[in-house]
Amino acid sequence: MNEVVVIEDPAAAEASLDPVRASLLAALVLPGSASSLAAVVGLPRQKVNYHLRALERHGLVELVEERRKGNVTERVMRATAAEFVISPNALAAVAPDPGRERDQLSARWLVALASRTVAELGRLIAGANAAKRPLATYAADAEVTFASAADRAAFAGELQTAVADLVRRYHTENAPRGRKHRFIVGLHPAITREFPTEEN
Image (cartoon, rainbow, N blue to C red; front, side, top):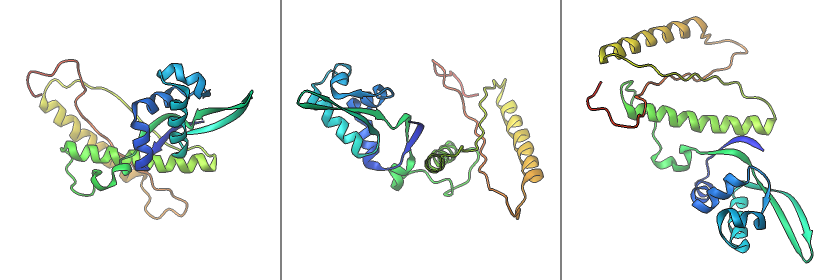
């Protein structure tokens, strides 16, 4: 089983968004049959089988084994990944494009960058899984509370300077064995339980 699969096919994305099928995917982190899953989703075994076939057609679940029980063959299935994410490529016609406009203060551009990251990582993960090789990535996550909008602007300015300096120091345009890497930094307000009363 893969750790994560990024779904690019629109039909597979549609199948995964069905509430019953999403419940089956969650339950099938551990192998199960239509009989064992019927109680989980509250449906007859035949209906569960129908949904499992649909998920199998789209590569979201896979056959683990078949067991004979009298005149019936029980198919034991498992999800092909522990976690699934839908790629923006599944909605390619309306997916945000970071090349459309480069505005570092635009939420639309940040969403476009995040969307591109999900889409590109999906392809990289699929390639790494097929080759049975690890994928070299790095991520950092932090929260910072700014006392004022001026502090936030100053932080962004210093961060931009620091990133530009690092890129200048380590970027080698024509390295014979070099591998290009994508680097993004984003900053957005954290979601809190209640909306702020004024814009910071």
